[in-house]
Image 1 (cartoon, helix red, strand yellow):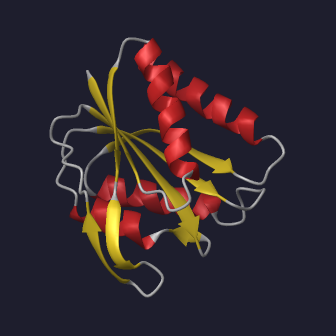
Image 2 (spheres, rainbow, N blue to C red; image 1 turned 135 degrees about the vertical axis):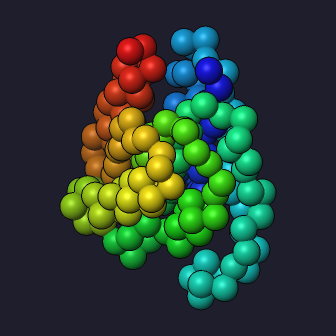
Length: 154
């Protein structure tokens, strides 16, 4: 089984979580590729184009990661998932957010990501929110990774 971890990361936080997940899955003997979506233009203005668009056809499982912007899923990930050509894939979705509590946009953003994936007939395995300014951020990352590893072991 081959896993593609596809992230959009503006500050590097989401990419960092993706790296940690990749390292943990590789220790299990999984084949994992971490890819980062790039853009040209301005995300804030909504005038941007996707660059480095990962092709997910070679992956059995996807792990999609995105930051939260304005209490919602960031527009870059919305566009990527909307344009992504994928079928018969299992998906893990996660978001990172600055705020300390998931109810400040993280829950909404991950539900938006999940909904976009379901519209593509993708099977959701697990979702998670990492709160970057929470004192227990490292525990959240470890719990998220542990839950993913549990899914892979079953």
